[in-house]
Length: 152
Image 1 (cartoon, rainbow, N blue to C red):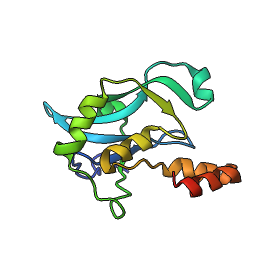
Image 2: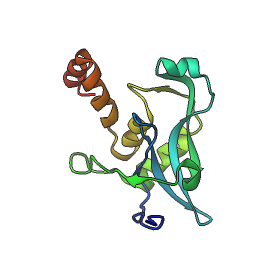
Image 3: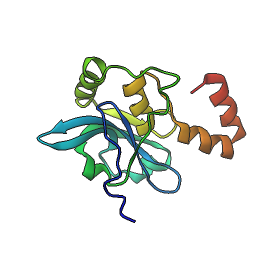
Image 4: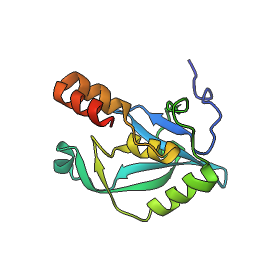
């Protein structure tokens, strides 16, 4: 079953989901092509400090631009908030934000600032992480209350 060429046409600003381990996918925003190479902006953890990651936090994270193939060969477009939030203009808002945010250190936080939060923030100006909501609503009912009250 060769699904290699079945990827949809990508538009700058599209949110891409790269399947990860059984719990979490990795997300990025399609940036467009440079010299014919498609690029993705994504929140990534530069250091491999697994101790920090055990607590779901890593201080030394950043948004990077990487070739699509480097980030992942399997992906799907996940513009899942389009019906609730109009996507922001890529060239006016998203691209300048990506270019600026790449120069700044970011704290990665699995609950409040993961790659999905970063991608929805760029596309919509709204932070959302469906995968965190699903996991926590299953595991800890108190978290579910928190998500519902705060609408995280």
